[in-house]
Length: 453
Ligand SMILES: [Cu+2]
Image (cartoon, rainbow, N blue to C red; front, top):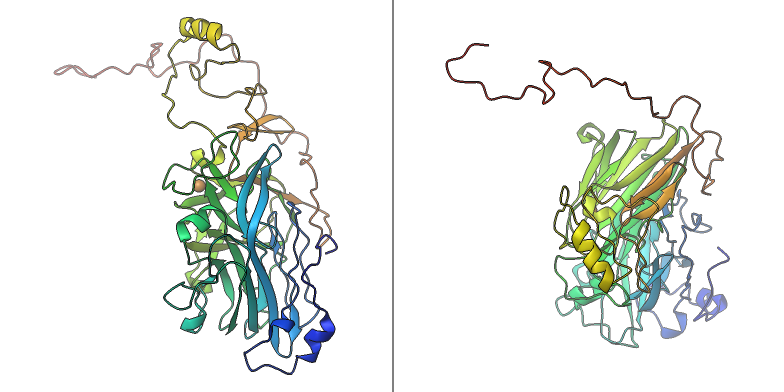
């Protein structure tokens, strides 16, 4: 991964010299480098070059954290720090994250690994890291004040534990949580099974959901917001900034989804039935898995599903709460369907020439988008090969294609629909369709008492 720049590099020679020291107490001189990246697109999977074999995940619009072996410890270095994240072209947010990004890089390791994770705090306030879902010694659980002293600005702490079970987990602070999570402090932690024959998949995607409340034209989220968020993100990206999930036809695909927003998200995949195969509590045994097309991911939880990608096409993949597939907007608009605003619109136009009366016939805006202040996104946007998609927030596309290479994650472009397979328009018949009793209102009358038939 050449895009990762190096810093805090202290030399592998020093690191290797201390390799025999596995007592659990490390010296400052042996802190591993902390790779960083500012790329906002999904980075290629990070194949292991040392330690146990596994098939790596692909982090949606993110990356995995490189590590080094030190004796039989796998060493990682997280740096908590302010970052700038682009939600989608046209909108950037000043957030907090790890190693140059929010969410922080995905940490990948293998069941049975001993991990040593260095955490350096470059935030203006103290922090900790909690390893959500992990079975570990209490003193490594990262709850500031309860299980450890806080990591003050400028300080580095070390977490050491053995990975007792495989699955999907998260990391986030347990210190000034409301602020730090609202600012984007989070990441995913994937523990691969020791036995590579356990539920192998061809493609394994992972992301965490986060939400922000940012007024148009501002750069910092309102951290005290409890419910009224307006940016609903997957890995701190919103449609049309979320990468597609490219999949080869016939691949077995796993998607792991964490939720660190303040509400639940029913995540829906079109064109397939999938099996719910895991949570942050572990794997769902095969005979207990159930079929779904929508999986609700509760707050502070993870859901993983597996699907056989046997249906080629461009399949919408999104949160089913329709307000979560929109970007920054006012939610306090009245419903105006059926209300004529002709006169009022004329009056308002004299005062505000850029204004647009909306809602009388629904709110589809098609190609027409209103002028926006700096640093915000249209409420509904994006376009496909047939026209406007009118989405935002938690929406992307699973692109299933025949003939893709096994590990090709490049965007295959829009789906080429076989001729005659797309819904089509016909000339409407000249006469009105016949109704049940021939009446134009469809015959919906209240039956009169005492009358027959
Ligand atoms: Cu949602």
